[in-house]
Amino acid sequence: MRRQADLLATLVNLAAPGRSQGSPYTPPPAGEVMALFTAELSGHHATALRAVPHAAAGLTDLAADFREVFTAPDLAASVELLNALIARCHALPYLTRDTGQPYHLHFHGAGDAVAALGGELATGLALVVDSLGEDRFGLCQAHACDRVYIDLTRNGSRRFCSTGCSSRAKTAAYRARRA
Ligand SMILES: [Zn+2]
Image (cartoon, rainbow, N blue to C red; front, side):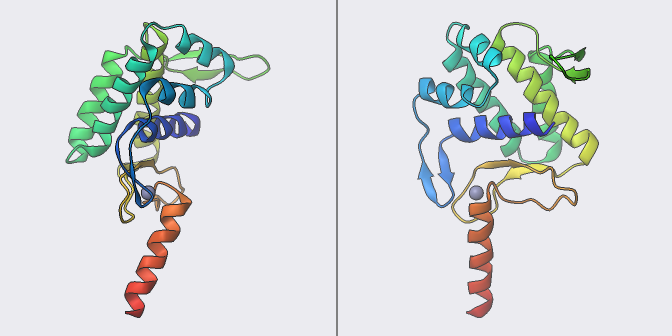
């Protein structure tokens, strides 16, 4: 679940224009988003993704669809979009055993590697909501940042995209108290 959550936030934050940690953010071209993202994947997943025709465009579209889950006006709307993504990617749970590892559950979508990834990431976020509770994902609350985060903390306290934004917000709050 942590792996899928990390990949999902990375993908959305790479591809979405907006503001990142206090500065304007313009995403690199789709090909570069794809190169940066596949660098985070294991070898065979990266190879499978690169083999898909128009994978870079597909990945950018997927990132935009996922971002809407984070920017929807309320949780019900987010969940509706997330369920639609799970259905569209035909995410199917199955047990698999990678070399030397115990059986564990995968949710690769059916279809090409982009759909497979979409199914895996969408189901991963659904599992976060199911197992950890509501209010577990959102947009960074720091000033001039709209990057997404997924909160896997035990007490559900995360509100920032990064430690950088967390310290910026703490400093701002401290200054506001002093003023
Ligand atoms: Zn942030």
